Length: 611
Figure: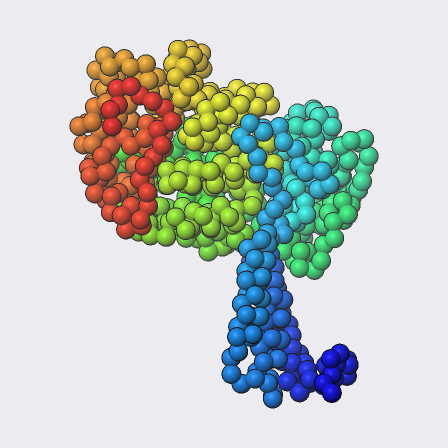
């Protein structure tokens, strides 16, 4: 009689006979070895946790498939492939694919998607959040202040490596430097539950750092500590502070997380101070100008930092900006014989730009930031193949509040505006007062959402006051809404025609009368922009002078970085296609070889432009 209900002993015997157990044990051993290797690689090369998570998931899903194969093909099993086997394995594969497809890596789902009008979002309930306020320098001397700023940034960077913690970015935290604002108010503006504050006192090489973690809701001090040490002997205090803050917030730090935290940062006092000096000049360049002069002074400090710490990725990335602005903004106006101070010409500047981006990419530890750098670097080369894939990967893994140069502008032009928009919405969680609000307002306008652009401008203006960047974004939104009179009145009130405004803000003098359809203004304005091809191209386009636009675009196309300059002009024009692609053979070739779309949106309607 056949055995209708086989006993456990019978099932076990059949499993042994077909060597299912042996196959399973061998697979488990192989997977364990693989995961150990992945663990080592992730820690050594600072890869993202997603790699470990996805390999583990695939390995687990592969186990039942191995068991099925062993059942049919183990010792004394079926030697031929049967229909039953194919059906079972197919079902397992389909199920595995569904699981992998639905799986979202831990650490990439901490940010909400939301509409642009949701500009008052706060961190999700239950997630630990903290802002590190600028440490106060209690000793006299400019170096002590820079050192204090640097310690603050190092603590921020160390805490930012913890995936379970939302940390306010430097730009927003430093908004409160030197201001006597109550901690609950600061926490409310930044959307955090906790605040770290501290002070630094230096005497020669002897340093005392005091730090404390305060719960914003009731002012309760969760942790405090003082550290006395000799700077040159020990520069790991920022890691100890970060670890203590994480512990006080109940965040478990395993050895791997502690190792990543310890590896973050500069760990060289003089490089540390020089970088902070450079960042100060860098910020002045973009907020007050003059651009190239201030960037040159910033690079003098970045050079000092890089000389002491040759793997200083962020210093290289900031260092590249001088050469980018020189080649994109200055050379078109001054011509191919233009030079930076020190005799750096066009060719040398292009080499320096590539070298800086290469070094930043090589030494960058954050995988997402490396992808951002890779996409940016591609745009300054003569080969844009795979640029679309690089942009997608950059936004998929860009989970920090770091600087991104012009990647947003490039992404918008090639159809990735929504990715740029969503990323900046996520950035606002950790950098609510940062400059990305301005870019967010511009991106909203460029995506056909001018009302959202005005909402973003309102929010940041209410928090940090009015500046020309916000006025610029607001004017473009008004032009997109065809409220030309309001745009013109705001431009006059904001002195947007002042000599110190940047070259792109100066475009408003062309865009506002063109949006009003005042053709006679072109005859008056054209002589003022004849010497500047970038502005001449925009002016010709918005006033409908197609021949001049095509001729000027062709001239720019032949320059060093000409195609990239044209992308920037298209972004700033807001008029769709300012020229016919046939007039720019170099740009056309890059687009064709990379199969990139060329249909830039026209958020602002200029009645005189008929193409």
